[in-house]
Image (cartoon, rainbow, N blue to C red):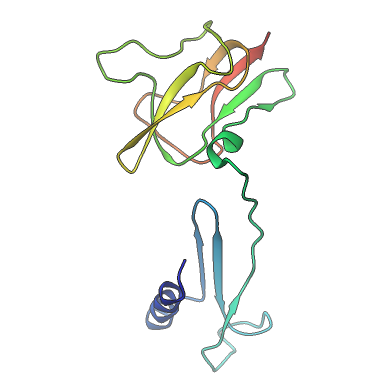
Length: 154
């Protein structure tokens, strides 16, 4: 994010009497809070701002790392969404789904597509196993890190 963008946000905060603002993008997070030293902005008479640093990890490959499966207590593994977008189970409405419950998958098996900003992103299982649950309906929005499938490892 550029400095001019931050200044524009600060101006909007002043004009609209907003005391706190937070913006999260792929590789960064910005939090602005009006007031100094954590004091209440209502008590403060000046228009000072505090930038609160928020640590953000930046893996070498954000898509691969974010989609990396995570083991849960039941022994099943979640395949999580690597981005915000719209979840599709097939490449087109007329096509068969990439994966169904009971389907065997391996690390390179495409299990879904997520559309983000008019770009179709293939999502791979990145784990070997059998799909036990599909957690998102076709055509519904998904959030970053949201579980989409459960896989029983083989």
